[in-house]
Image (tube, rainbow, N blue to C red; front, top):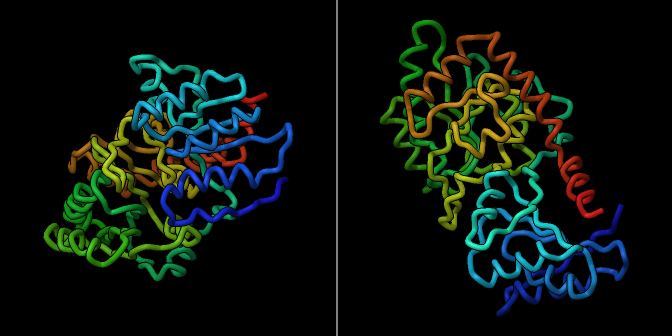
Length: 325
C-alpha cells in the first residue's frame, strides 16, 4: 500500500548518518508518515520527531552507549514515539535499567507464511534437496558460530545413532549453513570423531530454506546458555530467532534448548520438546523421543504449524502500527 524508494547506504565516512538523513529526505511529507528504524540507527528517528513525524524504533539489544540510551529515552517519552522489544525478557531489561525505560511494546519476530504454503511432503522436499529418502533426518539451519550448540548436537546425534541403529536405519544430521568451507571443516571433523552421519549443505539463500525444513523429521535448535552474534554480543537472555518461527511454519517436530527467551514462543510437550542447555544427553533423549514416538511427532507438528499463524509479519505489523493510534 506504499511505494518503495531505495536509498544507497554508501561506503563514505559517516555513511550511516548520511544514509539516515537521505532516507528521511526521500520520504514525502505528510501526516501519515512513520519513521521506522532498528538496531543502532537512531539518528533518523530523532530528526523525524523534531519534524513532527511519528516514530517506531525496534530494540534488539541493550543500549551500547549513553548517547544511544539517551536517544531511546527521547523516543519513549514522546507521544509520537514507540519503542518495540523483540521479547518480554528484553523489555524487562529496559525496565531494570538504572533509570528505567518502561512501556515497550513486545513484538517477537515473525515469518512469511506464504513461503511455507502449501507445505511440501517429506519425500517431495527430500528429492528437491537431494537428501536420503530412507532414513530419519535431523535438520539444523543457521550460523556455525559460537553459542549455536552444534557441538552438543553433533555429539548427541552420534549417541542417538548408537541407540537407534538396532531398530531402524540410523538417523542422519543435515546442517544447512556456513559461510565457507573453512568454517564448515571444524564441524565436519567433529562429526567424524563422534561417528555422526552428517551432511553439510553449506549456505543456501532464504528462498531455498523451506524445502530443507520440510524434509526434516526433527528440526534442531540447540542453543547454548550463551549465544553470541557474529559481533560477539550475548543475546541468549532476550533473543527472538527468526528460524524459530520458520521452524514452526514448517510444521515439523522441534527440539530446542530450554531458554527463557525461547519459552515465550515454545512450550514443552506442546509445540516443541525442550532440552537442558549444554546437555548432550538431554538433547539426545528429546531427539530420540520424536524419532521413536510417531504420535508425539504428529502432535508436535500439528501444534507448531497452528501456532505459526500468530507470528506472521502481517499480524506483527498491524499490532505495531495500531499501537501508534
